[in-house]
Length: 290
Length: 216
Image 1: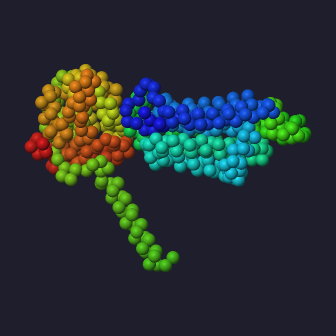
Image 2: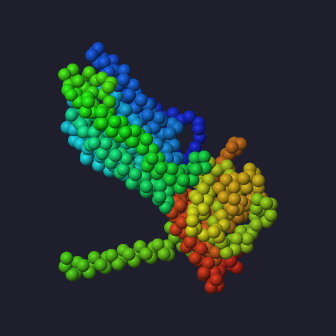
């Protein structure tokens, strides 16, 4: 039995494989969260919504890490590797941030002394450049072929992806209001550049490369007859187009909020999605769905 | 920048460029054989039931000979997929013969072989024979002779993972173990095809292919 999905040499099979490391990681992320929420007193009015968002993020993380997608991405097909990447960075990470209440985030960064570092990472240039630098590094043939070959390396790559995802969404969705961008145009430009434009460059390399870049997928037993070249082109398309519906949906919502902002600004500051507002006088736990 | 430094850098650049260009023009990326050997004359049975002379029936082409079996769980399928992908690329030479010789004649009937190879490329040639003929063929090519690994019904075969490559001049210059990447094939196949010129100039191994010239 293996702890985490990594490269194996046997032909692909739909027979279930257990990866207890994934289950442990999911439990490690869920149990403390639920306990903390449960121990919070009755003033925690937003518990249901934040718990749902957080658990949805964890579900995305689980799907991306466990059999079958985790194994397909670690060992057989590059397109699954890219689906995993998108699940980690543009589904799981933002949902986890949205599901993390401010009081919990303050407690975590306080105990782990992360306030200063998260403050720095939440600067748009740092978050955007850091995300894209790590994107290029973790998708280089060396990194994929080396890290995916071992369980520990594969686990490390997944952790880096999650951290990247959390980092790039901090300027938009940080649970700490002081770390978030305020202006809608700035949010939209950041989202467009950091998650829309720059990742298209490595995606282009994958789509139009003359040869399969990753030996892991090129030399793997074929998955339902899919050739290595077609698989890599699919991976490029997934990377290039997979995030578009999410990114552009968010941008469209932001444009709507931006135009509607004038009539609802008095005494209020915009929050993470712009769809909720905080009444400054009532404190951090008084978020209301707008 | 001082003149000696400039001259030194220019010289260094020339050496680097020279080495790089020399490698890309002449060197194979596969395993080069120190003393190239001619292709042995072996006659087996093809998937139509006819006799197939591995040398005479593929004259003028690059021959890629591989000893495998259709129930192979890993490397046979990977080798064949790689070759099918590479040969279907634009600009790749068309006169390449892929010869798949079974090492498991009990299960790999001509029909089974044909169906298996058609899953990769209908032009791949499937070859079989009696156990003795197949063992002699493996020895003639210098291949490790395959062995059955268990008595179970779904047994596997321990077999050689190399593809033996022979240029149109009938000489084997290189071999390709598992794993061999597509970039290696794309680099080497045109180089192997170029060895046709040597054959045209009278340096052919076609007429001197005798089993005794190969290691047993």
